[in-house]
Length: 509
Image: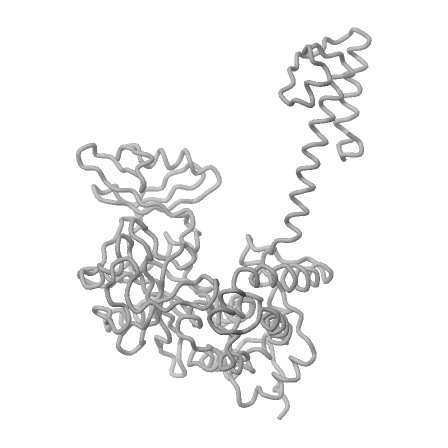
């Protein structure tokens, strides 16, 4: 037990055995449940020394399980990976920065990240940051470049070779080279089709997740005067602010936190949507159907039924260390019912304050489920998404977020056969106006990602996001954001109009 790291327990048990040997303490009854432990005393009769041996066996096995778990975690991606920036990358970005928005943003990232990463991790408490240089290098070179490269290669290489003729060894060389020189995560090679020469030629224009959220979005939040900014991450506070401004937003019926219930309205005799207060990607979301004949709610899948009067109490009993929000379940506009299926389909619309101080819709996607009997539309949960023409609301061909070979573009919905490409979203101008009005309501924020549902009568805001991702936007639109209006406005706020940001030296010509 001392070798297992439990010296105090070992000493306490040794003292207990000495007392039992002296007859001052009776041995507790113990019946082994493990076959190896039963072999120590087949008849079930334990002496004090054998009791100590059984406890030692159990302790060492727990220690072994923890060791194997740690060894397994060493080969798994750990939180946010911080890439190593080579001198060649810095020289390339510095040279191209005066004429290239993407290069200026990459250069800003590499020169400012050591100052801004601590601020990002202080906001995102659940996100782990590598504490030292050695662990950062380990996570990047081994956990990311070696382990993740092998994983994505095994998942995608054969399908890409069959579709494009690119040999597996060449894919591996290109994948590793781009991961080192962009730098990018290995899955970006397949996510953005970098195995195609035309895509690889503009690879440097793509923005990456390790740049966008930790650096660019955090810097924009600091520019937004956080003391005056209204909270967006808290879904209940967000809905209250939007309702107070007269915006169409999904209401909050109740919030359950660690067994405590805070009610805002009576539960309706209608379907409910339950999710984590700080949840992302549709994780832990649940849909509850209302049963009028029983005045009860039934969880999606028919596994549980709870009366309406005791519904919140049942959530409180299950919310030990979680915060849960309860909302009414929305419905879709009839014109998109054949592609939205059983879920509430939403638009992800990004608005950024432009050069004139007005919120400008920049880029949008439309998310929908791929299969029937699915109540979430998120791409991370197996859904589809289509690019949206920001001016007209016309949809392009849809695809998924998975990186399993070349992306499949769906002109029609795989479950219903309804047309996706070329379809126009109903009331698109109303969606744009709602996003602009909402951004004014949550000023002085500079960049916000909106999730908006198109209902039968009007669009409704689901939530706002202060760290909207760039991966899905670039994949769906097949457009690097470094050369997009998105990148132009980031350069305007972070470099050309720095305001309170730390001084950044201009790159040499």
